[in-house]
Length: 291
Length: 314
Image 1: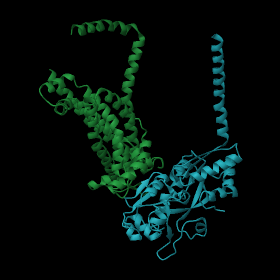
Image 2: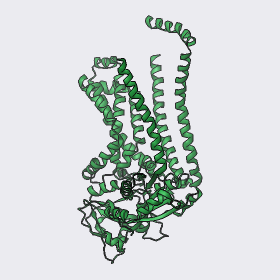
Image 3: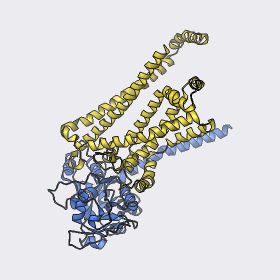
Image 4: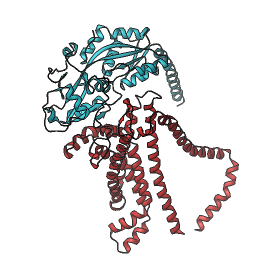
């Protein structure tokens, strides 16, 4: 009995000692080579795929990727809690000023391109829509599918939350048609969904729904509409080809912002992201490579 | 009676000895007192923190703008009315569903159901209260919302009503459990007297037992409402989050945006110290005031009830 207790005690001591040692080792490794990467939900799958692929190549580098929205990522960069912020919109001038006030100069990299797909329920007979129609619908001026060639059904407007870069891009380039002095807003009846998945779930089951989301998030169980730049222009479906030749009207650049000019590990990672291997992953995930 | 008084004298005799005889007693007493007071201290500190973070909002945003009908913070529209309206309509809807169902369930369990059914039902209902709200929200989004859209023929299933139904489901376990305890605490002699006077079982429940347990039942209702107004995750997932003013009764069957969902959805994104940030804390103050008012009303009612029963006894 006594030897049993002694053995137990010995085991406990050994376990405790190893347990004590491990965190400090990990802590040192993390301090030496952890890259914090946060931001756009549109880009989170892409950023994760990049991080996984990079880590198999460079097992000594630790990358942590989180989503939350472009605004969240840039806010974290301004507060200095991340090394790289992902954003599906360009940084705003007031955000840049706030960063400068904190002594940080965000450096911009265009890492991929993305098309915003207009999605509806598969049973919706509408196949195409123009930007002017989309603008009128999201302002709340058109409220029935009949007005755009569909059935006599109310239109349920779906949008991402206001912290999403996709939301801001859509507001500026579709709802306001790129006019800077236009101050019109989303109709108050617009449903603001906290996630891409919220939009997908509603579009899949509701024939009244009209939503938008990054091309990378469109699945075969929803229908993508062809979009025309203006009434009378040709209707174009979003594909890699139509985004690259710029015939699809709702496309944008995806950005990464670093804390000042990148150096060391962050610079190596950014070089890799813009290299051929990472850009191949961009195409695989339904986005459009930049080079 | 003599027994009780003799016990009292024993306690009285022992008390000074224990008090001065052991330092541990003093420490324990002090600790208990400190933990009691700390609750007040924490509420006070939270209020001070909320005020400190929210007061700049009144300087940065015109007060009349806070009473605007448009909430679109990234362009400086800070009207709180649609959010307050959204919270009220979802909470009132939840109360209207939960109170009748909850009371009926509590009465059935306490007064009607046989003993074995009661022993099965009560724990089952309490388990329901342990469901994480995000799970309920997910089920609401994928199951309840499509069902409501088809059966009620609304444009979308993501409505204030969907949120109300789920919140009612979350408030029910608390409500049933507390109300049942209150009904159970009514002395058996009350029921026996009513039945002896020739009242039916229904008359006994409605005229005697329920009024006698009124205090506890009211507490149950208030706790249920408190649970509903503070709930965040579920409503964010199923109410559609459209910040529209509820102008007519049909607003219950249209999307709504609650105060809690707004804070949860936007707090992660705001720049520290911006007007938007301060306004979000103002919403927090509004929530604090509302739940404080609900609690105040509840305790006022309970207090009044106590005075009344004291009068009756004297």
